[in-house]
Image (cartoon, rainbow over all chains, first blue to last red):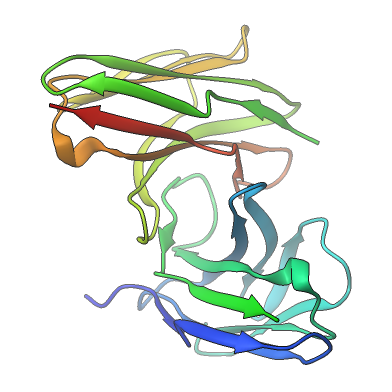
Length: 114
Length: 110
């Protein structure tokens, strides 16, 4: 079956702009999590959605937001972009986000802010 | 919050055995994960430990000691393709969403 799909794969923005990233989970998976990956900080948790509700949230400012649709697809938005937002944004899906353990990651969206 | 520590980089020889350690300080432990990430690719799941002891899966094994806040990933019969970053992650509290360490970059040389 198809894996987790993220679009776009690469994008370049300038400071102050906003960006929307999309994630389509594996069919049947209802939990979608978002992570930011940078060389200095590693993988940092942004938020998790389950059945269209934000169930968990990491320690990121309010400029980072997300949502989930009824078909489990998810989007995340970053407003007023800063240089430090340059990173690989990874989406991961799981059946229910419970102790089944395994997260399935997409290839990521690499954002460069100039 | 959680504090997860693992070495930044390790090197090993093809055919050898390597052990990657991970220590953590947390409360409400819900399990420890290991993921593998090749350069430019998505992380892929390797193992999940929630009880103390050793879990073996082919060439890879993962060990957990909850009382010591310690885990290791053991890779046997190393192959060049094992060169990757290995991420230790811990799930805590009421959530099973893991918090990741910064990863250990393993370089396997001939």
